[in-house]
Length: 604
Image 1: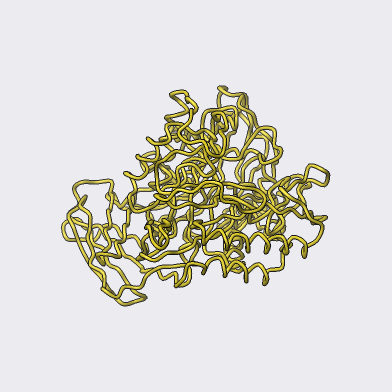
Image 2 (image 1 turned 60 degrees about the horizontal axis):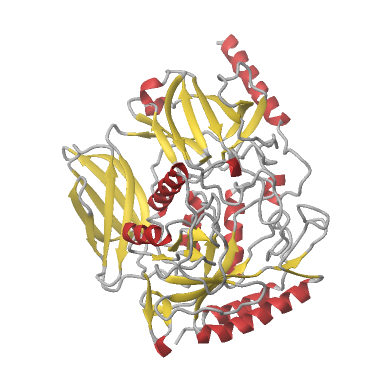
């Protein structure tokens, strides 16, 4: 017993020593959350609140890593420690190294399975890994996945040991030299293009489930018919039924059941509470899977009663609507980058901070720009009351940029692999985000980047999710399809095209730049904005000037607008806040005042 105790103390001492050796890499600016990060407690929150079970185990923390030539065997020895889930290029990974398309990144760690989980199936979850991941447990390959923005999991039960288990992950990511969706990543960061993100960048976790278990929920509210449809997917066809209960707080307001595989139709109260940015009410849900009359799996979820639509109204203007009322949607371009974590916010507090500030500034919407966030980000939007426009993280070449008034022009011809990658990941993105009430608009293309078969992609998106609006190409090239005509104009707002059949929106404008010394990613002339000023007052006054002009254009036909942008990003200094989130660059009260006028401009 004494020997075992000494062995345990030695192991704890070695573990503490390892954590003590970790430190952020590089000398770039960092957020306050990154500066205070505890490597022993990295992103400890449950990673998927929209489908939650009671038991889980977080595998974030220090892993071993190695970088090897592409195609070579697993390394005999690893090169050091990496803090998961921060990309290898990031400061918070503790590594800060760039990887090219001729290299692969290996991860390794051990884990044990709690004894209380005995008899359960064990699922190994990855929130996101960029781009191709191959996974081994105890030297047995358990699966692989391509796509840098969507979650995946493997059932690893059959290969587990009773004690320690060895987990190895190999990642290949060609960045901008491949044919995959990648967003703003580029091997040579400059201008509007940023540092690559390679490898694990969202939480890795274990989850125990029954032999037969729920795999997905697809929730569709219908406020016109006072109902909610819940499609419950399971890994089995032999379970008897699924049951769904809906709660207002602790009060049961709806209950329904269906045979396994059949949607559950729930009648909601006629006076059901509607979700909106001003009143973001969420109903709690409890979903149970039954076999032989016994509950074998249960998950907690939530939903909201809300509707997104367009309608031609006063003066023949087609408007965006929320819950059957004209509603001007206004928010910032939110790229979701961090100086210390790149794609990954240092903490959940940091993740929600940008959204809370967006609300503080008086916005009601956010455009998530060519990136997909972790599941918790969307839950925060649901809870805070922020409408989300979700971009596809584009990649690939662009066709010739057409003139502003050009419609239905020539598109890029993608390779078969590039097109397949796009279609696969766009479907996976919609699948994993479908049930979040805050998501209002899908944006498959941005500014002609990688734009191909636009009418076909838009038609597929509309058919696949008829509950939301589709913005075909934010900023063009423009095609007469979908629900929205989206114009980009910098720096000030301008309406140079109009579509009476679709909602006309200003998908990007602004970009007012201000350098805050000591809070920039680069400290030279590489910093840039679409227009630059020298003080907070000047920037605020320019913002208000644009806002007043926007108010005039709303009456002429604009139904939404997106200001560039939430924060500075690397060399871009046109954020409402600095990249490290330490300085708010405008007068918040004055910005909120004009923003509220804009958001309420269509209220009657």
